[in-house]
Length: 325
Image (cartoon, rainbow, N blue to C red):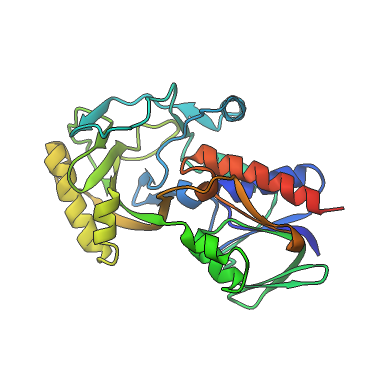
């Protein structure tokens, strides 16, 4: 029996897992994907490297700034200072420009790959059902494998966490109240670099909300690779559209904003992030069921940024440690 089972190998899950392992707790992380990252995942395809989820991270608190500095000193993060453009009118209430934007060296999942290397992780392990018994938790995979632990951390999106816990759980209603917004991402690769007068752009008009060139980020070994993110309204309106249709429409939008990107690409694919961000995060960094030694964490608890997910993971580790003898 483990001390802790962690469901999800994103920022919250791996932050909590590595902190618990560092103080001697036995931890296992289960993840339905083939590697770490969550929405900080990176994709390599056809000779191209894309950050198709989180584009960069920022540090607003002193605590996270110190952690970012440590990761930078370890060669995992590097500053990113792209040539920026803005299309359309900046929305009222938009945040201030950060002091520094940071990217993972070689991919936005660089830090998470390092964290995952320090704990036991089981990839392509899809948690399907949970059971609480006297003495701990039982987690069963879709394939029928079973793990047991004294405590449990769930970092899946709120609706998926609610489905695992069941409708009769006391936190089910609160989980269902968290409104998660989708985001369609497009990945476009070129054999020859198109002429574009910027490396990244905030877009406040039309279908897109963001465009960026990935291959100029630190440690990338890639032919020219561009990513676009659709806005929330467009993504919701096309939530069930076919990826090929989405890719075609968003590539046309990229070409409208930057004619150089309208040239025929070598690769053009779309990826749907169904649970990209919470429209409004909860007030606290975690949710907890102390009686059952259960914690739920994620950026939907503490804000949509990577920093919020990390803060949630730190808080989760502290609460889980308090449950253990």
